[in-house]
Length: 77
Image (cartoon, rainbow, N blue to C red; front, side, top):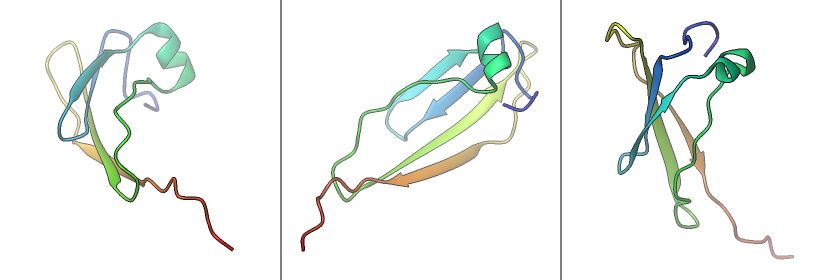
């Protein structure tokens, strides 16, 4: 959030199926992040989450995204 988000702003996050809105608290600003969870995708799948910050005046940042590949299979020897 690097000083982009202020207390009361909203962080809107989506995994393409579920959208979650987190209202930024004073603690979130101090920490520099907000937290939420999404359902874990199946093994071998990629989870992509997009995010955007909306301020109290209704202004929005550009949408950002990040992905993680899920691999829960134990390696074999």
